[in-house]
Length: 315
Length: 249
Image (cartoon, rainbow over all chains, first blue to last red; front, side, top):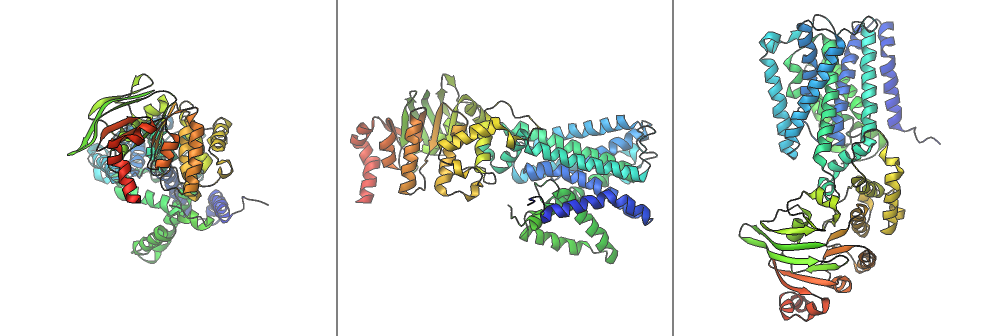
């Protein structure tokens, strides 16, 4: 009767409901910690969603995606430090610098394939990491504390934690919708075709490079937005935001949740970060438990959590 | 339509193309045959643009395409099929052909409209599938098609780009006699509308279809002419056909 009622869709719907009602629970239980934690999860889910566009749909294994978190974050941090706390200006700068950096990284890295692509994206993001570590004026290794959040006028006060959470959630849902529209458009089919068989794409007449480059810029810009939100969330930016292990975390979220599925990165981000939180209460060696779990997912469920729920094997 | 002039290419000490020259007029089905290692695949690679020749020129429909990128040649109307089936395996049959249609339906920087339900892509794609005899397999994943069906789809993909000329790299590779017969019938239909260069091992199919035949041995053209001339050519018999007869006898 209803083809929409599948285990996967039920899980996604429940998760969305939980995310929407979370502030209500946090207020009722008087638990600001959980709201704080989930704001972070939602922001990183947005970053993972943007990575999914190039990694999942485009087959471009970028190992430097956290660089855009850092760039978006530092754009906010530096402008605030210099006394420019107009939110619209900050956002415009954060997004355009992220887009420019993505254009640069993409223009270089997309000329290579496979492991070389991974290494170049990693190298360029590490470069940004060291640049940030060397910014003495802005705290260098120690990072930079934001004295105030981005100012969007009196009707949009990012200092209100509940409102800020809903803004982040709205950005995440808009991001997921945007990715979903893009991947099913003509442009998106070119991207997916290039993942599947680039040689054939050339043979039927597609100059794939320019399509992949634009896709790379989209993903970087969207992740820059996540970085801007993250800076406002923690009132702090530091080079650690763009450390390569953070790029690895984003890849894990995408792979765990299910590559090339619209809600996969969100599911993966929630699963990974909640698990991390819960396990770290019991032991400080929680990575020893998460590591093998990821291994099992990669070996037995190559499409991630999504493939477990749909029973479809991928890859 | 296609003119090849003194095309040469070496790989280290091996001469894969040794001053190859021949021309294919519009409407002709021209077959290239030769024993393994004769340089047929290298020749196809130079025509599609995947391999850059050391010397010589390739002219297509009045354009010098020698240095042109792969996708630019496709845009001019030179389409190819692959010897080893090369499809979008995680797409449906219809998606595969629709993507090939899209390649020549103007630029693809359209980011919002759902392309999987766009009749401007889907309708022509269904037409092509019908012509290739795959209409009832449209919604099937390519990875689930039989080998013969995948070979048919190979041709359909090339056709969907509305080419003026087809380069077919061993379309019968790995086919049983029944599937081969169906492919010969398909090619005989296409031959009426398109110029075709056919590289093929199946001699029966070549002599059934070709208007003219060029024989390559060690990268060199040793004969080029009508099928009956090729069949009678003593050097060809020695180098190639004889070898097969010997193997059969």
